[in-house]
Image (cartoon, rainbow, N blue to C red):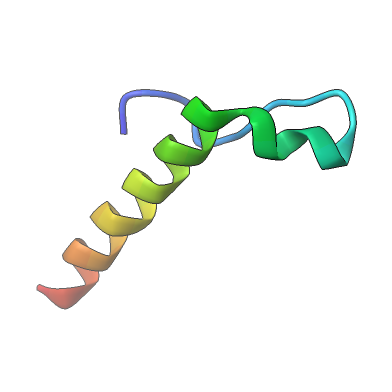
Length: 38
């Protein structure tokens, strides 16, 4: 991950529109899973 691990929105239901933040969280999860498998 090269960004802060968070998503942004003013209202909680709008968080789904932060596509870059969601993609970053997916990548972070994949990286963590890879590390845990080692």
